[in-house]
Length: 354
Image (cartoon, rainbow, N blue to C red; front, side):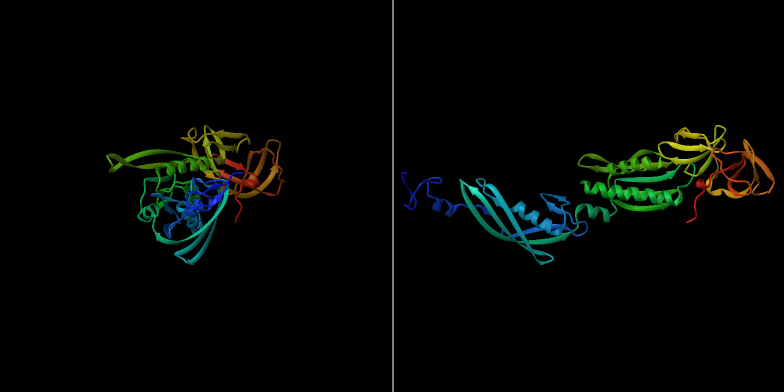
């Protein structure tokens, strides 16, 4: 094999690397480059990392530090099969030393390089946390109920759905997904929301679980960059009737079993199943709640009727025998007395004391 003379140092070699020998080429070749000091901005509240003019949720502080080093590390374009190893060391809560090692193949030759940098952490408030602490909001969700006030359980559940949705959306990148204020009202609750789109999603989730409907009402609040700025009020209306309510609808006495997009129930007169929608039930009359039921004595059982003691007058009255009735005469059974008569209930329908 013919040898080649390096034109730079005169060494005899088998091949040239960019017109010089291997030693001369790698003497000036810089595989990696890294600034001696890096500055990292971290949100002191949510831990977001400021990168390329925007805040990003990455992970814990060490992951943010390593991400910053990776972004700042220069690796030569000619390097192939690159293997990178980063070793962080916490000096103080605000300073990390990170050692970087790189193995690569350059022009068919294995190359190794090492370097280190100091990462200085600056803790400040990100734009979203500043907005949240400052009470910023793009929308208001007003949670009410049709024909009544929401119960404490409904208000608690609506708030929980909103909080869970905000956490989920924030993890997916919606940095405006927060609740900046919660206000209790006599007729319900008001949620002040950072994100208009997230608010719409919350309304849909509440309706999916609890039923009801919502309407949007925009309000012009100013201009920015020549564009109108709006805030949206989402008027939520929970269903008028809840599980456990007993209603009179089109001459039938119905016990509501579940209420959502569909309303499921059972007829207290003949035990037949009932299915409707909240819209169809407009105009129905609430006559009692299953929690109003009391125990009374079952006097006797006939083929299609039972005799019970009226829980108020203690007179013996005959009422229709419920389907799948299996109590024995002389025992106590739950009944519900209404202006439309007395109705026998199953023990499983009665709320249990906690």
